[in-house]
Length: 173
Image (cartoon, rainbow, N blue to C red; front, side):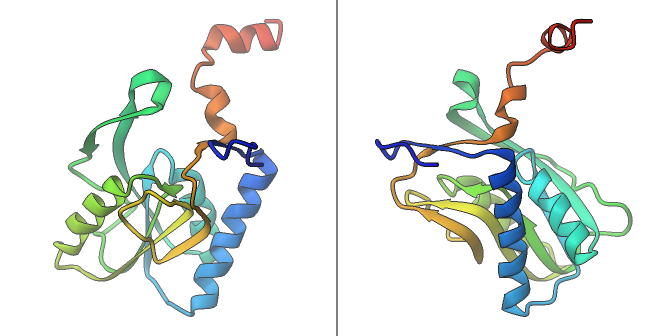
């Protein structure tokens, strides 16, 4: 639910899962056939996992990171993993790149540029749950476009500051 000021979007677990399912339906409705899914860790791992299961396609993972300062709210230097992790073989053929959102667009653009330079990839398309109005990159598939570019409070953020001691208190261990 978007707050009145248009600056924050709060998403529950149920809403989050429904959005991932809607993303799967958008990709399916396009009729595009793909061979593999590459998700960007960390935000794209949950959507990537669900899409991998729904489409019964192998899932590869590439770690990226740019949000570290101020409890993950300030974008810094983009770091991309040198290697892509996948069960067997190489990333090749028609690849669906999955992340949770196109925020500034910097990460997606950098990853897309890197992947398009790989000769084994024949075709590449991207899919996200949200595309912010400020994004410099427009994914091929997106569930929601957010013109005001709010900060998205995703349900798993509760774990960002939770440590084992906090879990022990929760379960009175």
